[in-house]
Image (cartoon, rainbow, N blue to C red; front, side, top):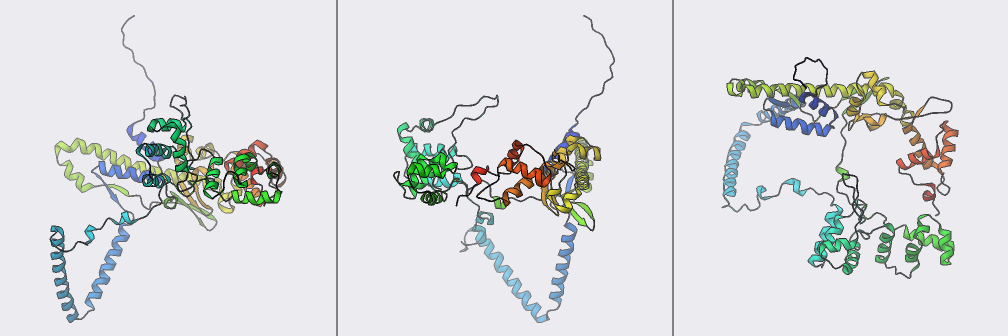
Length: 495
């Protein structure tokens, strides 16, 4: 063992804070970028924002001011004096009333300042949890029963069913499944009383909420509708639920010794029940969700042009006047120098992000021109490497650019990732994209005879015959499930 010195040359990639920020900005969505810019404006005094429509808004204000001035000059002298006198008297009274209102000595109890903000007058859909908690508070429950009810409501899934399954831990293990007795023990409720309280909650609005499965949900609704355990509809749900799911109505008719036509009529009644209690409730207001495209693809004659969407994003620049004043203070020079470097790098990073998105979108338009002209059926297979090689960037960069970025096209609004599809080989033609295959399957299902729906094997044969697409039945089943299409046995309409 010995101590010695030696020289060594090596190369390594160092992620500077500026580079990390540039990568972070590249993968942000439009709304996340707006928030990030706002944070930087708050933290960096040398940064200033300039709205894109500031010049237009200034011209509009000046034009409106000129119009008001011309309107005033067109009035007669008497009208001016009367208006001036009236205005002076009104302003004096107004100010006097405002003073009295502010001190609380006037009779202006109904002043505008006493009203709640206008935002509080906006309505929004109530979530299922809020709706159920309100009913729970209004019900005649003891404190222990109410705590049990809160635990039940807190364990509902997005369908409105009671989900007591265990959850996966970070280390890969899974917690044990719960029971209503476990919830009762945590709430301090006797285990024998738990089913009774749960039954009362299941009769809250919407009826059937907090059920543990579809069968229990339909039974609760049928009882609420006035059917008793001895009624045929109740028996169909309770005793023949598996046959009901499989549409095996002949087996139900044989077991209940009833004509098939009567079973059909009873099943129609069952189908009016709600299978998803939380259907009309959501924690997110779907009506308020909107997507603002990052870029537009506009058709100009025979060509397509890519235009970025700068609306709503502030244009940043250095506040020179403030910076000069701050630099005059020697004690602040080091701080301002650092902020200036950060501001310049942020401005360049945002501009580079904009150029990169446009460049990638232009490449997508060039490679997917048939899609922009004719529609989804003409979408070509394309992977990240195809675009990365063309624009001379890494695939990871293309992935960041296309994540949470949207483009408005003549065919509609799409995420940039939508245009990347795996290829499906045709028998006697060029390869077709997997998305086009999905759309072909969707159109076939929409046009099928609902009384004789197409099976997965029938879809395979149709794709090979009509489109020259040869794929396995399991691939068709996978695409069908991705499209949210049920199996043929569940799509069949008997009525």
